[in-house]
Image (cartoon, rainbow, N blue to C red; front, side, top):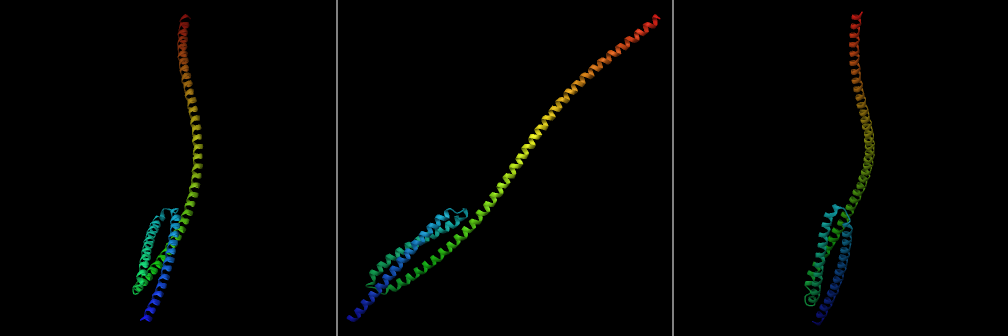
Length: 219
């Protein structure tokens, strides 16, 4: 019996060593998860400077961060459970198999999370590429707009010159109309004077005829 107890104690020590290794691996995984969270925060900070199309991506990143926080919370809970399991391992070696199975599932989930993070990084790179293309298109549109504004300014300058010429032509036309009115007024006055002269000439002719008639009578 003593030999069996020594064997059991040796096995328990081995199991405790394995549990410590599992705890160390869990701590390493937590460190990696914290590093991933730090990277995700940096990516979020960079994504804030992106255009409006990244809002959906931000929403997805927030969901991913929420999932990461949930995973961290679960990992912390798992660490607490591992401590309890270590305490219980002295009496219950059989539960260690279940904990190992759960740890494998957690590692699988962590691998899946890493894969999802890589996919998110790839999507972010694609979004950055699209944003650069959009910025390039915007610059081209701005250049075209500047050219159009320059053409519009030239057209406005030409229109102002045409308006100035039209005003000058109108001024000249008004002056010509004023001169024409003055000429018409002078013509009317001349016509009136001519009529008066004709009337006087007729009266003189009438008087001359009367004088001729009197002269004939005198003769």
